[in-house]
Length: 426
Ligand SMILES: [Zn+2]
Image (cartoon, rainbow, N blue to C red; front, side, top):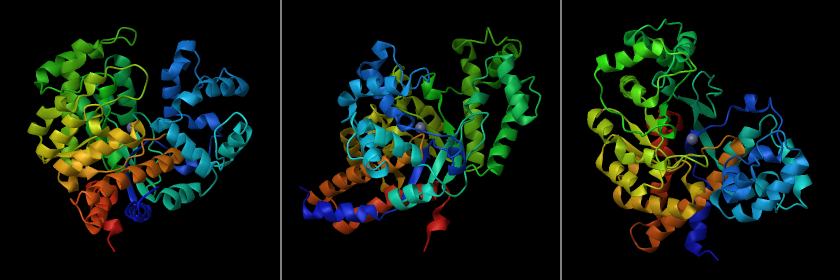
């Protein structure tokens, strides 16, 4: 049973728009090109299924070799174990609200599967995202060598430039040359190609830059003299794709280029999203992602806008401390409510207690499909409601103040940071 206060707050949060700072799904026109079924919606749940035992059976529901019947059998063998995790909860919300089937069971599966397949249709982003989740717009991560797939209405591009840092062979350079039409023989050429890529992405409406390197290396990026970076690059121009330059050797070039990317983002006044914390898969080095590894960047580039993603979970205390201390660091809660509602609520509480409210970015869905963002938004509003209710109950905030803070962290801070504030002023 919710108290009256909690019910009132929950109603009020329904009507506050969300600026979604971090997504992976494509614009509706691209989404509608491909068919889907229930299994297309697993995404994160698949990781929990794998962790719960599917991986030990050497089975993957993402492998197309399995028949639908085989997938169904394997899914329901493990589903009971994951239905209460954040990922599982989000899938249950999709099933109930969007596929209109109350329970995910073997008996309801045929209906679930049919309704899931029928959901994507022209105009459904307006129904599901704008009306359903009140997500007015979202930043979309754009991968290297890929088109933006952003409509500049619901979705705005935040491209990754990491591939300019991770070149390890002649083949990698050839791809950059093809993208930018710049011949790359030395470090000067590589930076010239990066300039071209920035100009191309700016033309496409880029609103920020994303650094994704936490998935493949420690996120400490030293300042390296150009001559050391160039030595690596010259080796790279001679390295065959079968024998690329290894990470230990490549590191000075990677570090140098990460700084080069940051400098260009600063020149264009673009926020720099950096993946910190937990990686989305079932085997990775999570301690590569500690937010405190980034401190030298915060010290060096005061004019930058560093957006630390995902609460840095499980290093949330480091994350809070950095956002509290550095004026150029923003705290982004993207992905957190489905990683775990309890952890996300403790984190949001800590942020509100310690960090200036204008630097808290309260929502990023982080899904490969819009339906996931819908479900995540519902869980986020529940968590935000619980945290703010606690603040009202312990008399830190009045009800009006809590709603003011909600509008800031759910919408206004993100809209201002990514340059949309003027769209939303009355
Ligand atoms: Zn993401």
